[in-house]
Structures are given as C-alpha cells and as structure tokens.
Image 1 (cartoon, rainbow, N blue to C red):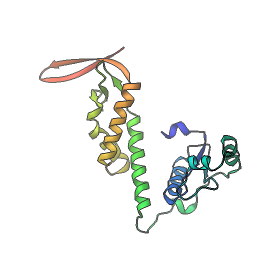
Image 2 (image 1 turned 90 degrees about the horizontal axis):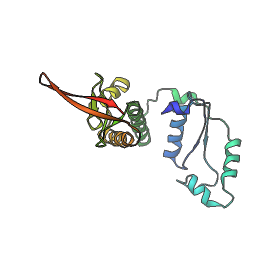
Image 3 (image 1 turned 60 degrees about the vertical axis):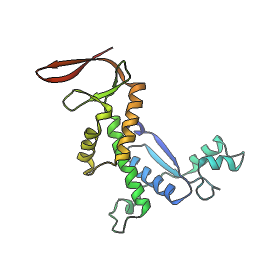
Image 4 (image 1 turned 180 degrees about the vertical axis):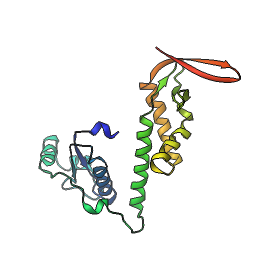
Length: 196
C-alpha cells in the first residue's frame, strides 16, 4: 500500500481527539520515508472529536480553497527523536489500538500482494507457494505464516476474516478471468488454469 505514496506529498487531516492525534502521528511515521513530504494538520475551530466534515460545516467559507490555503501554510511533519526511542511505560489503550492498526495494515499489505484469479462461477483463487490454485477463502494459513515471518506474531482472527472478504471482493472485480480444469491422477486431485 505504501508504494502508492512513493514520491507524493501527503496531507493527514487528523480528528480533534487523542486517538485522532495518535493515529495521525502513527501514519506520518509510517509513510515519512516513502512519501516526498508529509503534513499533519489539525483544522482550526474544531470541537472535541471533530473532523474535516465537521470543519466544513462550521462556516460556508470553509471550502476547498480555504483548505488548500491551510495546507499550503502548514509546516512539514518531522519525526521527533522520542518517537523512535523504546518506551518503557505500560501500554495505554491508545497504544494497543495503534498496534492493532499496524498489524491490520501489515496483513492487508500482504494480502494485496497476492495475484487474484476468478473463474466462471465467480470463485476467487490465488496461487499457493507451490504454484497451485488455492481458493482465497482457504488462504488463512498462508497469510498467517507470511505475517508471522515478518512480525513474529499472529494476526487477529477478525483481521484475517476481513482481509479474506476483501480479497474475494477484489478478485471478483479485478481478478484475472481463468478457466479451471480439475485433473485427477495417481490419487491426487489438483487444478490447473487457462487464462482467457
């Protein structure tokens, strides 16, 4: 997912609450080395928990032109030295949410790397490590292993279910259409494909 931001100017409009500020800071840290530059902006006049939609409702003058002015005047985000340092304090609920968000983002990026194929019956497939067609619904073990190789832990069951549902949807819309053939030989059953 980060590859889409390479060399781009990125603006993060944060919500006016602690989780919004923390998540904005997390996003900025995550994309800082990939993007051309990053700006993290708290829009003026927001009430607690307010966001860009609320800002637009405050005044009829809060329009696209004013937003562009605010963005142009905002300083570039720079990582603080403390952000990279190990923290020894207990995990707060906000830090736990950020860790879950980081895990979900990693899982999503791993899933989006999988090639997707769809057959005439709208079943979605990907390739297993041994290059056999594998139904996307059966990729839980594959995604869990890849996640473990990188993060050393395991993704949550809810994250896995959500990513698999997303892969099915993406495959049905963007997957390469293939015709699948089932071959049976020497007690083994496997599928091969032919692109259309």
